[in-house]
Length: 318
Image (cartoon, rainbow, N blue to C red; front, top):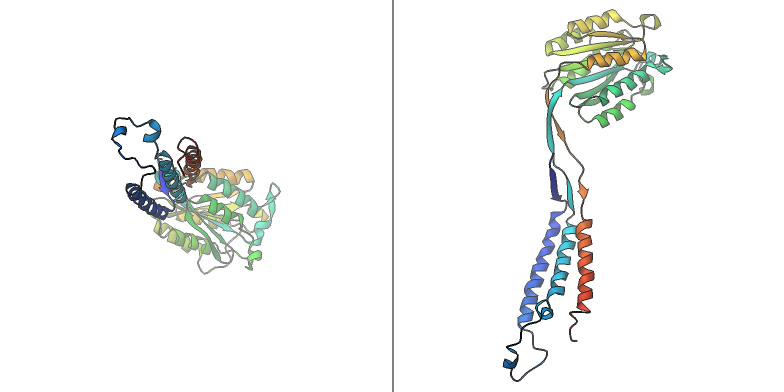
């Protein structure tokens, strides 16, 4: 990174024009000024050397002009910060597709319901990203778009925190695995990454939807998108269809996992974390810091010194 400098309001520099006009007017006025005292013959003074006070008599005027320039610079809002930087690295384009059917409210993950457990571990997974673009989809009887694949992890975490159950969104308590996969594929359709992944998190079996999950898996395979399925809970605790999830993963050359405990879920994400990445670029910005206090302080010092000198050392006749 390199330090950079800018003016947030450069139009303020146009106020230097009155300053230049004032200098020209003052110079012209001095050339036409009448003498304070009249002498019959000034040749008697020609041999006298000019004192330091005389040579510096214009110093207060110069200080006032410099103070004006400093105030104009402060008005232009000088700012310092880091320049825009592109960082090259290795990354994967990932879409998290999370089941929000009401069965995900079952509390069998260390006193957490399944959805909360999935959200917690997913948040930790996101926080471990650096160059991976991550998107978010939720689904029950239909799939809902939450966040596109992005490097803005703060925005992504906010979207994840707002994920709630299907009944809170007015959706039925049915599960459409194919719709969740289809929405993920739609998100990844414009991705240029060599590694594209859908992480499908569910605790149920497919029982609705316009797209069959096997058909959706075949579409993913054709597009080069791997699907990693995570079956939350155990078949005995609900309608979990591990065979279908394994088939979805196999068709798309992904992997299928079963997470019955919170530690299992964390381990699954750790395994997915070892995916083969592809080169990506990340564009970074930094906030600019205001530096107007420096020219303002300079202007204050110059004005105080100017008034002091004008009323002491360089005091002139009325």
